[in-house]
Image 1 (spheres, one colour):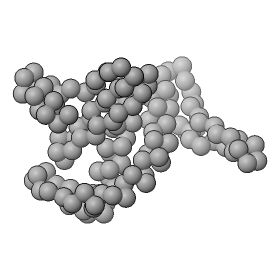
Image 2 (spheres, rainbow, N blue to C red):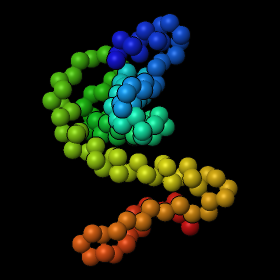
Image 3 (cartoon, one colour):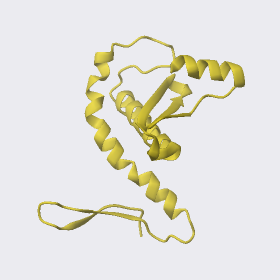
Image 4 (tube, rainbow, N blue to C red):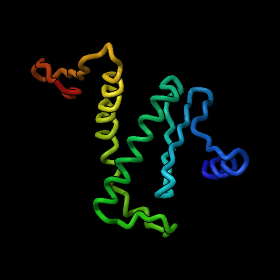
Length: 136
């Protein structure tokens, strides 16, 4: 995949951002300033936009996490031991769940939408909770 990114950049000056195969979508999101990319394999029915949203959120969470912990993410091309990042997989579920925020904020940018909410039900007691709100 990295070779495909490099070849497309050299040939066209642009990077491949989405590939659709039978039943599989592959979304590629890069962060050139950190020399990092997230390659997300997902159901092709999820579509390019949703794949880009999730891949972007995962990549930003990764950068935020490891920059805060000062694990040395740099643009120098220094090699890292993958075990330094082993615990990141535990965060991916939360990152995906929290990605609803940017979706609701984008909805609210539409003049016809005054407020966007995510309401979830608690399976144990049946109560509803506002999980995310764009304000007001």
